[in-house]
Image (cartoon, rainbow, N blue to C red; front, top):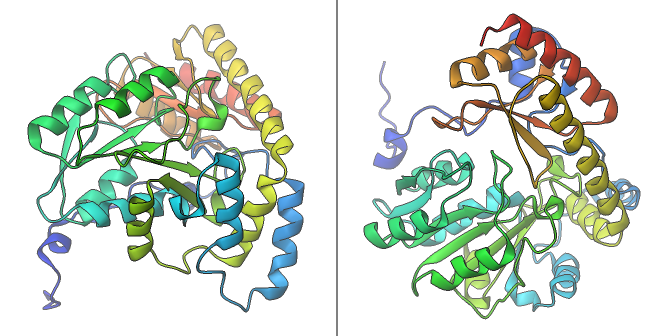
Length: 368
């Protein structure tokens, strides 16, 4: 029986999909819990001890709503970045903030530009608001900034998505190149600069934040280096007019009290973040060494994951499935050309050892 529910044309046209299949769904399918959950770029090293205490203490007041203005956290972030509180918007992770930016700028039929194979949640929101996705391919496994800008100019797109460092390949552009990209964004267009992994990147990857420029919105998260992916909290830094517009459409209680307390405490314990970054760098090198022993090319990464080239999309899918059957959760890029790689998050030393043994076995069982 067909329903007569009055869905909008946009909703009626959308596929039944979400950006990601969660590891829990795969565990249910294979009937076992993963021994190594290293596919979603979560931190394997936990939250700051200070954040853990703050979050535990906040539970006593969990019957209250969180501060809808995120005042204390915005004040701390403003001091950290040398900007005004009015130039910061806090949301339920970068995923939430991407939805707000799309809602703010995209109507049915509006073209938006991204890279083919880049972070899919941006596409999810753009499609959900009726936008028209315009994509350009990666160039040498990096997002092609020249092509993104050219495409935006050609199709009249007001919104451009660009991640630095990049997910899913882990590649990056230097600060000077990123600033040159920002400088070339035409007036009246907005560059979404997703910097979720910037803490893991080499120095001089991110240019200084300049909130006087209304052509760019910088997005950061507590999900990665701060280890708070499950708490869902991130923030955008932008020109006051942009931050004000985001605040007009955001869900004001999207960030709960526990997340607010944890994020604020984590900002006061940046030694923990530095420790995580150092351990991730050691783990990345282990993955490079593993790939070299297995005679596989790898892509140097500025994130908490490494992409390893197994030769083809068909083989990569088979390796991912074989690993899942043997208790190791990883993912892979989805776009043609990029899908020759598998992508593994840097886990604990124990998880890295499990992955190394499982990958060797999987490659033996999956022909080249």
